[in-house]
Image (cartoon, rainbow, N blue to C red; front, side, top):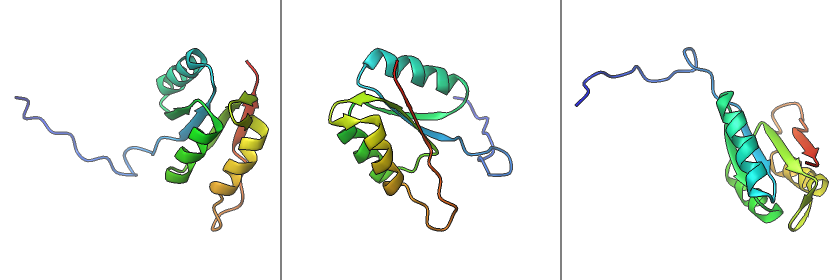
Length: 103
């Protein structure tokens, strides 16, 4: 049994990881991009469809969306508009954290 303990993380000692939602219907692309981003220290959540992405965005706040252009249930552009409304932060300056791409 290991008796060493780490001090609890605090905002002063460890900054919060940026949260990224990556949406792509190709599981191989999701795996490749999410693994790469995690290697750089980002917190990444993935979805394979518009409906799945919207469910996740209702429960979690994200700093960036990386979206495929063509998705089951709609387009990345349409999804970006919906996500922007869901993730609106009235107390802050509005942001538009979407990047739609075709791979």
